[in-house]
Image 1: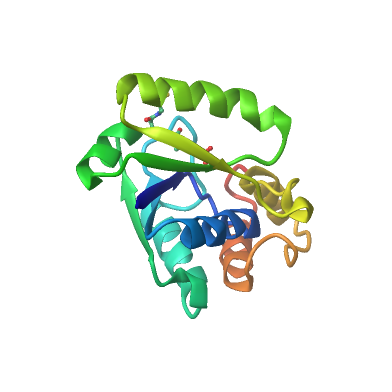
Image 2 (image 1 turned 135 degrees about the vertical axis):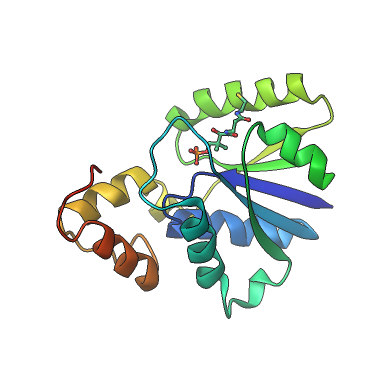
Length: 166
Ligand code: PNS
């Protein structure tokens, strides 16, 4: 069975990679899909986010059944286009659940054959979010525990002269 793992991935974190590894072991094929037009302003362009994910997966033995792409518009339309009926979302804490629950039900209302499967990351990653990672990066904090080195390097470049908002 094929599954779609959508998100902003601005940028990809160890939390996302943990979810992705779990999804890759549960499904025959996983498509990680980067949302291009969300309400949020992103630090990385969609292209940059896709490339960062691809680089993070390079050489990982568990990533052979994973492909990366991007989408604009409704997620369920992308799912239909790819012929996928399963969405993957990571849930870190109960506070994530309210939003995730609403989104899953909205997506199922829009596309009744599309269901969402929630996966939990390792306990020690439950506090890691791309939003907090961007904030730590902006203020020059150590990113080693939260993102792969190559992502940390790209974040540092983005916030080098603090000319962009977090
Ligand atoms: O990583 P995020 O920001 O929590 O991901 C949210 C995302 C991109 C999965 C969600 O906002 C999304 O699916 N956006 C596309 C528009 C859409 O289909 N929204 C869901 C219907 S409510």
